[in-house]
Image 1 (cartoon, one colour):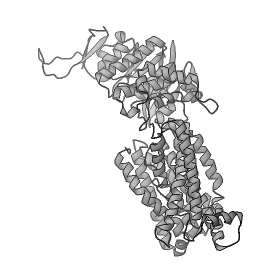
Image 2: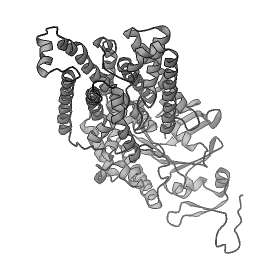
Image 3: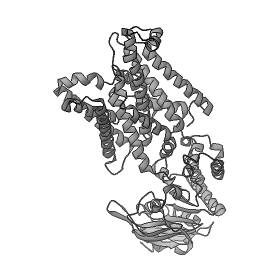
Image 4: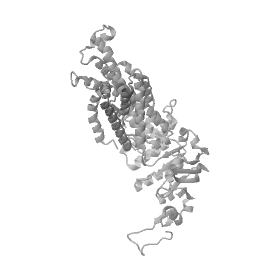
Length: 273
Length: 335
């Protein structure tokens, strides 16, 4: 069952088409990861699914309803997006940031409520940020900062969360930490997660549903074990590689060809080039 | 950020004190000046008016000056807060972005070409000038691939401000008679302004003050960046247009009454944030009150610095503002 769909979606930057006539369904309650080479339009697609970018043609359906025709505040109660590399104003504390997640629930008549308070505390707990609540966001490390932003999107209390490259600029430890956090959120609370990732191996490890974007459209989609192969990587990334089984998780693991310091039997040659 | 003042109770208490201080400053502004008057004469001018020179000065010159000073100070400070938030640029202010210069240019043009001197028309001409500059800065700053960045917007502002200032000067050189009429006004002054100057502008300023106070939640959210604000359900385009209208009312209204006075819009919001952090629920009222205090204090100073002459208060605010501006730039909060 799908929660988010694109219906003959066409997106463009100026005159250049980025996505053309795309019909894509995001499965409910699962982790979907978009992959593709730089500039292939995966971030653009993610942004348009969160109404940050208006479609040239076609529509985005959230729970079957066109998001462009709904009040943006109502959409914000069902879908949250964490854009790439968000910057908090100087000196803003983690608590102040996370409280902003309750924006769609407030109005002139409805001020801060107990429910808002609970949602904020819960979000801080889920991201292990409770102890940093009074720290300013810009004083935190990269990983903590990203957790603070994720806490804000959690406080928004939406069923679906979109994240644009949530692990970029993070070291390996913090990449795993963030992805584990998202994995747990999905497993525990059945939230639908859609994200753009660059690391193919991590994408295969965490995604229930993998979507490879290429040439304004979807090149392949499905369970990573089913769709990930050497031909797909060659087509989508123009990179020859060998796919083996991840020794820890059994998911597909991609090893690129190229040059290397030690070549046992001469430089390896690729099957797909 | 948590500012120097932490608890809400302390903030309310200090805000109340600041309001009191503003009232005291206004009273001082009524009593002290070149013509020697005492507190007693000042009170008597209202309770027991006798038509004397001193009483006339207090009622017709000093009181309007204090009221106009407060209104203009509040407005310029609020315009600075709004502009800094909307552009997400800590060194934004209506003088740096050319809004004051634009409003000034339009008024000088109206005076020298169309012999306009009606106050009602001054107001609308100033609004028009501020709007034209705001749009020009916005369009110029958005040009190019990277869109509207703080640095491009600041450069665009500097260009527009310089252009309008040059055009104004050129026009005054060509037209000596207009020069005499507008020179003191142009330096930014609240001296010799009658209350009749304030009346046509006041309704717009009041609307903009209330609008600013009501906008705190939207400002806080917008500061997280346009994408995040949109994701949280904010209608960012509507917000920017509304904030833009408020800024134009505040800056245009101030210029119509007092001429282009610089630095209040940049100094005061920074001071307010230093005190109360960056929650606009507090930044807005604190900036408003301190804007009034700063302008009136500067105006009192302007009366004494080169006795027996007066310098325009715009010169005084520049004297206070320049070192502060350098301090902000050096601190590196401008990225």
